[in-house]
Image (cartoon, rainbow, N blue to C red; front, side):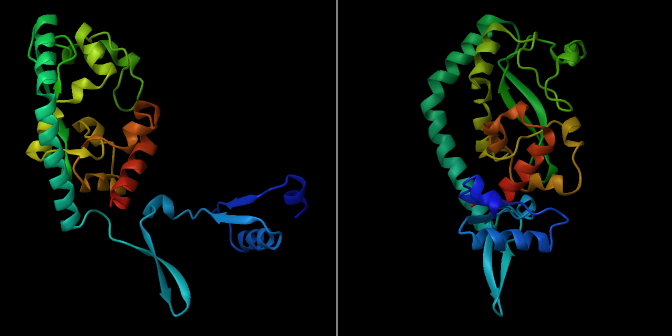
Length: 248
């Protein structure tokens, strides 16, 4: 109580450890007796997320945990949203897509689109589309730039030397991802969801981590918004898991 008074504490956040027990209860009681606001951070929320309900079992308060993944009605709603919004975006962005395609063709020889096998919902593989941002034969030269990887054990280089002039522009603004709207329209992807990984990256995950495949992979998602390659892989799979657990 002297500590609370000396530092003029207004709120105490209690994060129980594996050895909490009665000590945690005493801390909460003391803080309440001193007139300080108290908040508790349950460790179980790392697993079940915030999608919980309060249940009353004979006067005992319980946290009710809903089933993991999307219900049939939720999947229908998410798919309907994807189809409607993606169709509208393709109509509006058609001139932009055409201009990018012409720029790629003029800048360097090779195809306009880059196709790569990714792992999607329920572990099913599909061909993900991107605008080509690298020179032809970039995959064969991958061994030359392995030491520049910034997202180990996954592979990501911000300033990849194999990138073309137009490719650098597209990557800085994430415009190379636009062809994935066609993946969304075909049902292989969603506008929002976990990152679709290549086979070698997908093999790194096991057990509960593979529950990220319960929903369709997305063009963007919480992991990308929170910092993409700056977020460790261990945090990435947790973020994906909680997205699936908390979807509404």
